[in-house]
Image 1: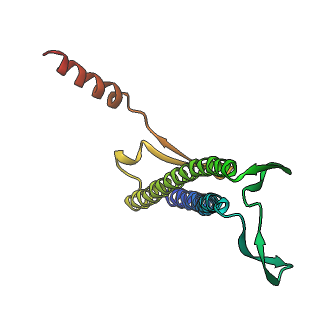
Image 2: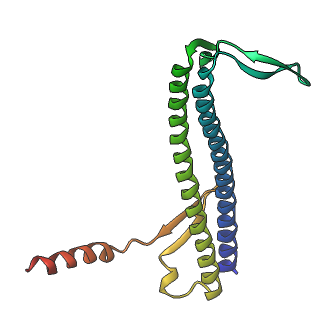
Length: 187
């Protein structure tokens, strides 16, 4: 009975960890989607800013409130007001604004790559937790007997984290590395 309660405790702890990691992964995937949309917006902005100064005036539908639009023209299309920081704006030429948009797009692209890596790592962690859960169920059905279960343990901490404990066998580390080096050193 004690083994069953430990097994149940391990199962609950692993399932809790799977849930937390799953939530983190979903959050990161949402952030990744937002960053990708932001990157696409910066790329579209760069294309628009490149095309705007080609003509002196451009026809446009000008918004009047939330519901009404009326035809108008855009003038001075080479002048762009750029947000530099918190409530700080500057008047820049379209070519300067394109450069600013490209630098911001590069920054967002780096964040997209970072988020992709985080999502990949969280997916890998979920796979490992799933394997641990399966391993825990297999060991629980064996009754915990045998030498394989002696050096392995999951400990549920009060803060909700799961600690994985494995027995350190010095012979595996020192014997494996040293034996290969001495046999290849003879030639």
